[in-house]
Length: 181
Ligand SMILES: [Zn+2]
Image (cartoon, rainbow, N blue to C red; front, side, top):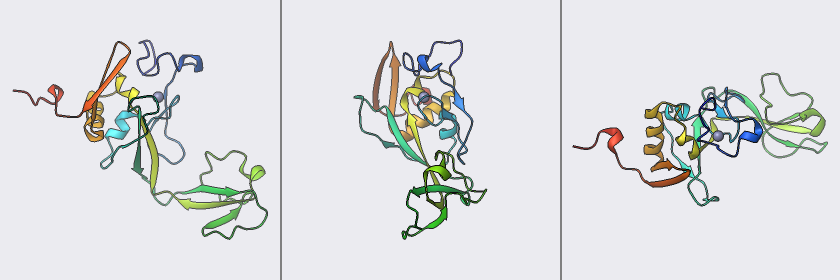
């Protein structure tokens, strides 16, 4: 984590924003996220029972990010999941309500100035959260080592961060899992 130790995760990127830290869960999610990149906390991801990594494009030339669906702990929770600026009630399927009459139990995080900006919003539950994991967080000496190992095993790639360089290879049980000898 950020703190007194050098930032091995977002070195050279996050400083001008005041570094990074773990944000407490929000938006109906139950996992912490990085204040800089939005990554799910490695320990919170490793604690999930069932997940798979969906690797993103190698925009920066290396597998820097994967997406992951995380089952909601509260599948009945309702969210605003869409909006329209039109005055008339949309004819699309869904539970549309006027933007100035959203029930109080509905989570509107992520939608700014809903009542002023939109005419109607659509409300639905979210059985799964769409999370992402930035592999730079594997360079963090802070989290539980076993959690970092689990993430690499499930995602299928093992990473090494050394001298500012990153290497990766298909995951095979390595010395850290005591597979030798
Ligand atoms: Zn981050």
